[in-house]
Image (cartoon, rainbow, N blue to C red; front, side):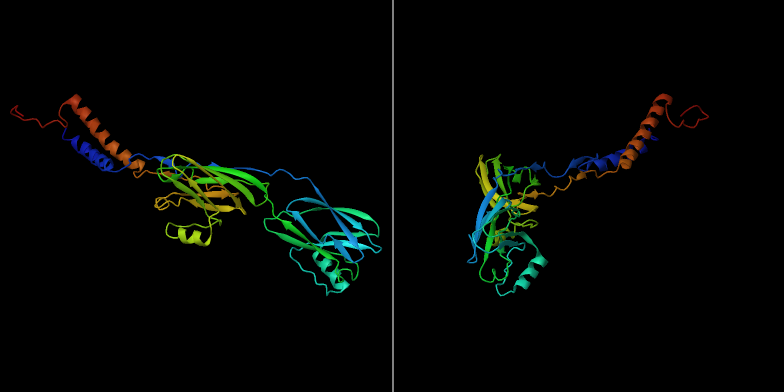
Length: 337
């Protein structure tokens, strides 16, 4: 047993060191919490719209101010009520202001360089229809239209089309709050492909605990606020959404998303954000892949050495059990040991 003992002791020393470690066997887990997914749907399609525009020898357009919605399909019904030809020529550049001081040559040069959405000539007493697909936009636009017949624009024959942004679609997202001061999930992916901005989002937050919370969304993508600066940030940039989540209840809200990106949301209840209660809304941005984290702190070969040392001790002890003392004692001539 004296021969086996050192091997046992060595193995036990290694195992004792491992026993003090919090984890001895490699274990892997997925970082983060499950990802939530929003659902988007297009708005109800609106029928095409026909707008009649009279062209007179004043010279003038009537009406000279036309309002349309973003993404609409418009048919202009152009009626020449005068004895002279007129054109309905609409600039492609939003906000461009054409100067009445330009000569006909300068006006023609502008459209030759910048192009036009619509350019229709209507003979006296005739009616002409032309279709126009209004640009999709998340901000207001305006396009001037004129008659390029020499000196008609210079005499006041112009007008303006204003484009009002419309909702590109609707979406729903949901989340949960817990008394562990966390959002579950704390990552929500919303894909609005096929829709134009802005998108109207309805958020529903269920409270799984007794503590009250808020679901407060930053208005700017790519901005990471901190527990130290979030109050000052929201004082300058009002929250895009601020849903109050009552105890063991549900809170809902609506907000408009104007562009793709990653938006942070937090709980504004005192101490909750500081305790890690925040998450991110990924709009048309994939959630980063889940990271597999290993908690192993002991290499496999160290474990193998420890068990190998004990194994040697076990083998030596077994040999002793079958053969008696190991090694055999020296023989004594007088027959005594």
